Length: 230
Length: 237
Image (cartoon, rainbow over the protein chains, first blue to last red):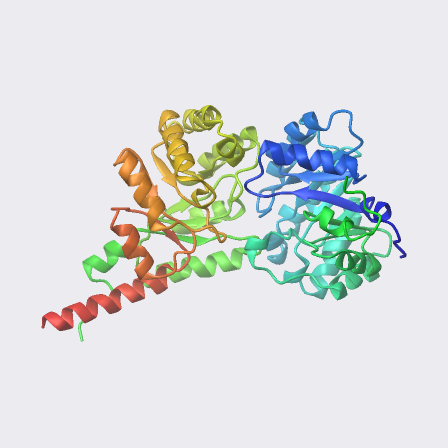
């Protein structure tokens, strides 16, 4: 992939603010920056969806809700209701954190498959982005998550919550390549990371990720010489 | 040498703790191992803290001998109020009788303490005193003034206990505990949490007469306590 301009990479970013201490002014800034710098999607916590939707009225951005973030350890029915709430509050896209521990336990019938299916059903045609924790899964488990996600009709697989306080290992470029090799184009990969430099984000896209998700979108874009700060 | 493992003061000390088995990657197997460790120790902590998905299994395993604790909107507090209240109703149905309710921190940071009190009140009304609830603020991220106003809002809404941090790297310091104790006396139970790994830390909190402490390092801390008790007794003899 050849990315030459900041606009090209901006179009591939989901701009996240999932901090514990996000205030109203932060949401206003997130929306304004996304609009100004042509970032099409912002990702916020469920409690902030309604306010973000109000703030972004008339702007050309979509609001994604991070359902069950960051732990994901909720029953499928609980997640289904949370997705319905997010859509009622105005969410245009759904990120849903899967119950990773339950998947590792092999709770496929009672947890993993129903929650994947609910994601697609309740999103009702909106883009669906399933968040896993690639770094704690072995190769077979990674393939299985991808296969189940594809069977459910999920659009995107997100590599990690990138919740920095969980102290999980970082996702590597090889991890991304592994996933892309398995799913080809039947499931699109989003790599979530803090990306301190644009070259890290570009490397993820070069490894096959379809999009990146980050809190640091401006740090990435501003490295381009023609980036219009003003 | 006297075996102090179950001396009355050791059992009482261990009983102050919430033992946390929480996290994104935690499996049912991890939880079972953690609970077996509690059983093997013979200690009866205040509660075992687990995620909602594990709560039914843990309620069954603990058979009422130890309380099951499951947090709500943990750790970020940024889920919607309807979702939080539904989760509380669900926990009541499951049989969970202890919870940390993570308040919407945006309301605290935006100084909407009226909304904080409303959220507490809504929770208290749904709860009907069935579950022991501590209201969670992220004291580490707040000024002293914000901590005081948040605690006042908890009281105004009918809350009885405050948990000062969620863990996950946000940890309580004795200065925060001291602040709340000085201002509110015994109107609010104070529950320190987050990065509590040593007996020295616990000692600092106990100066402010806290009676509940959240830690994933209960066994290590109790071992330190036993070692200190043994030293003290040997010096007396």
